[in-house]
Amino acid sequence: MNSLQHKLNQLTLTTMSRNLDQFLNEAATQSLGLSAALESLVDRELEARNARSIERRFRLAHLGVRYSIDNFQFNPATLTVPVGTTVTWTNHDKDEHTVTSSTRLFSSAGLDPNETYSFRFDTPGTYAYFCALHPHMTAQIVVQ
Image (cartoon, rainbow, N blue to C red; front, side):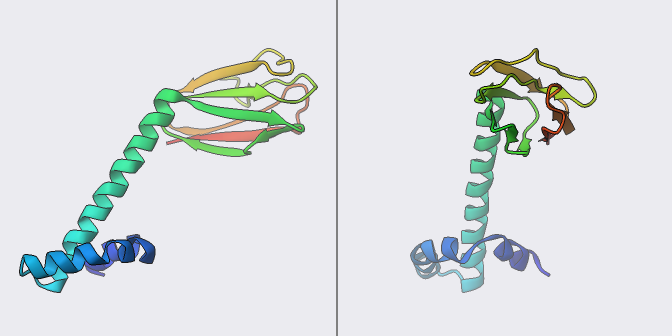
């Protein structure tokens, strides 16, 4: 598969149709061949997507992520975050819960209703955790 085909496979038809007018105008006004104009359009779209992805990772890492404990579950059961993200768990149950790493890297005290616990993930990896008071409550954080 050549480079252009690979790039095209990364884009959705919706994205391409949204930019079709721009593509056709560029091809006509710059006397570009259709292939060159299409490659230029694809490159710009991929750069924009990459910038949005970088912005999202920056926001997650600097603003943190809120995590819910509700109905005897960590919600969601798996969360993926960038390195440097602070995750804050809030207990929305009526019962007390903990947030305890399977490796004991982090461990909260018992959290009463509406109390929070935060931990910053600075190293890539998968971090399994559970509630020490209710060991059937399990989840994981994936740090990339």
